[in-house]
Length: 113
Image (cartoon, rainbow, N blue to C red):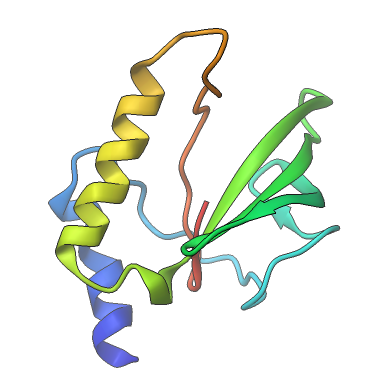
């Protein structure tokens, strides 16, 4: 657990653009009603091996969003973090009507969102 905490506290130094961890306290498991940045999670849309996708309302813009919540315990090594960050980087650049647009990446003690 200590290794995992140290690993995630340094990820922003390894991957250019990865946000530093926010000091806010977020529950270990996220679900409807919880806040991730400006987004309030609503119903779960799907679940996979690494995490879940929730419908959400951006409380700043009042728009509907999808929030992908990954458990950090499933991304424990540099290769998995690299692949996850590569996915985020590519999604952030792509603009296509058939592909969900990535707006932001954040992370907490227990999740990458």
